[in-house]
Length: 318
Length: 318
Image (cartoon, rainbow over all chains, first blue to last red; front, side, top):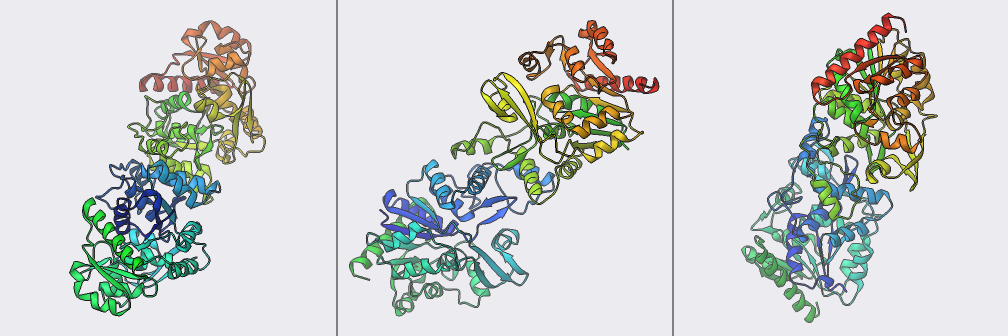
């Protein structure tokens, strides 16, 4: 039975998800992952955020790169280059096994959810790992270099183009994870955690599915977001740059506003203590915790802090 | 302009093909390769014989394994096993680049011939390399374990099942390489060499295409086969075992009979000197050469010997 449901994207979100695996019982924790970054490359179906979370929870992630597997080798890419193949998106030799096997299984008719669950199980992950949908949702960016699919913007152009608008193609009609909808409607659910992933690139694709957004708004469990902005900067990735390009003040408060109507609680970093009043003024409960996750200990501590915050909100009836 | 056309399968044939690249000018040599071994595995289009010849001519082949690339690594297979994927057919990390890229290009609508030519060029191969057809031909074996596709028999079951009959599915309707047909009809062609590949498994798929068989029978150039059987044994692979199972005497003479009506000349190993009379009695010219190819030198020597034999036949009007 799911008591804790976490929503997340790639790197930043995966860190807190890993912390949560040490703060909640495996069979009571589910991670719902963004698939707006998914794409087809070289004929392979690639799910970058699902893979980052899978590898992180399995303890196999490459901490140095921030994606892929630890101890990865690159013979495939080296040879692909010699054959004149597209080499703007790196695929490690070991990582390829997941892409090839997933692509094979998708073509054989299995859904992404079933494949992801099986892979997680095979790699020893105890909690549930759910892609946000088995239907394609594709994040597309309107930039000063034209319209770019997510990976072309993120990896191909290293987030350099200025973003003017973001679309989540397919989100209108994609069916959200049935397991996530069931968990959100279940009175047994005790906490929903929106991990400190990029709100516009990693969390928004989930919220762009009307049924999931509604389920989040209506869930009896407290919904808590952890700010990905600390002291006006993003810990990693293009969040701050993107907010600037979208004309938004680069503060943790802006993110709280973005989640308005969905969240009951918001976790600010100690650095942003002075924003507590503004956020509380929006009718959102605030907790202040150290949100910068370096080692495993800080991930666990933040996860425990967030769950304790949820527990307080739940008991106070928020 | 093609002056020398070699027909070949994998390992044994590739050795002589390599020899021929040292005995003929690159722009006058073409290698026509069996695709009856081709198959789809893990969603990838794999062409084992084409790849063995490609890697051998590019000097990249793994001499130890007899297939694949030298210095190969196996991280992909290791991870695939952890994911519960099919692991009976080994795919090296570096080798995978060719399979992924070929599959992508085939799905994009390119033909196997065009892709093979481009890959050969990119890997620095000077002569022409032609798959026998862009249409699928699939060698299938009727065995005491039932009907097995080629790779299931060859790799999956290590040629252990006893073979009762062999079929070349699709050969009736597959269109042979247009370049090969044109070369065979061209008076400029000076020699056709059937390399010492397995006649029933590696050469027969080519001959099973009616138009190619007819073109071989009618070509004005002398057609010479090199015996893959030496002293009643095969140098490598299941040829001798297979001949026994098909009820054929395991001698170099049986192979000459198999090629009856197609070949003008036949090369016996020195060991089989006593068979010269029998083969000559079938109306086929015989030359005796050292056919066991170990180092590069013996490959070159055999290639030169075969071409000299062809030249003698051509000048004598056979």
